[in-house]
Length: 288
Image 1 (spheres, one colour):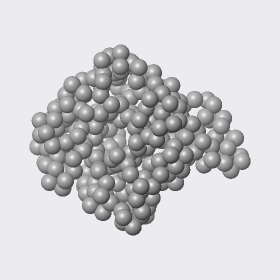
Image 2: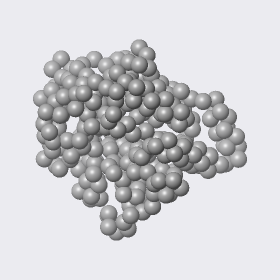
Image 3: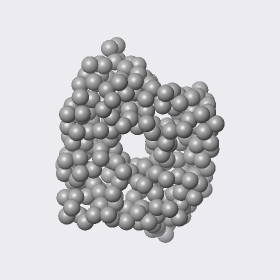
C-alpha cells in the first residue's frame, strides 16, 4: 500500500494551557513531514489575531508550510485584504479561503456591508494577487445552507473556476461518503485535487455533537461501538483502529493525500499516521 501524504489542522489557543497543548501537538506531529498545516479562524473572526500569531510562529519555529484560514465574516474587503498582505509579508504562501461561520446568535451568514459576500468573491480576490496557493472547503454531505447535494458539488466547481487550487472536505465517518462525493465531482467535470478531511475520534460524545451541528451523518453502529468500548476502557484503541481502517480504504481507492483535524491533540493522529506508514522524517531537535 502506498504511503499517503499528510497534512494537519490546528486551532489557535485562547488560554495558557491551550497554548502549551498546541505547541506540544505541533512538536509531536512536525517530524512526520506534513505537506502543509493549517490554522483555523474562529466563528465570526473571533480568533483573527490569534490565528495570525499561531501561523507565523509555527512557520518560523518549525519550518512548516502553514496555510492560514481566512473568512468573509465581520470584516470589510479592505480589512480582509490587509490581513492577506500581512500574511504575504510574513512569508505565508497558502490560504484556506472560507465563507466562515456567523457569530454566535446571528443565526445565518450575513455579509458585511463593505465585505466579501461569499467564498467565491474572496477566492477571486486572492487569485488576483497571485501570491498564494488557495485551498477551499468541500462538503461530502449536504451543507446545512445548501438546498441539495448537487448544489454543494456545483458550488465547489465555482470555487475552482474562481481560482482555488485544491479543496479539503468536512470530516465524515465512512469512506463511501467521500468516494461517492469524489465520483459526483468527477462527473461534474472537477479535476482539481479534493483532499479528504479525517478526524480521529478523541472523544465520541464531543465529536458526535459537532458532527450533527455541521450536517455530517452519524452511523448507528458508531454509537454502539463506542458505547461498548467505553465499558471496556478501549475508546482510544477503537478510535485508532477505525480511523486507520477508513484511511486504508481511501488509499486503496486512489486517495494520495489525507488532512487530519487534530483538535490540538496529537496522539491519535500520530498513531494513525504511523499505522499508515508515515514515519518521522526528522528529529525533534531539527524542528524545535
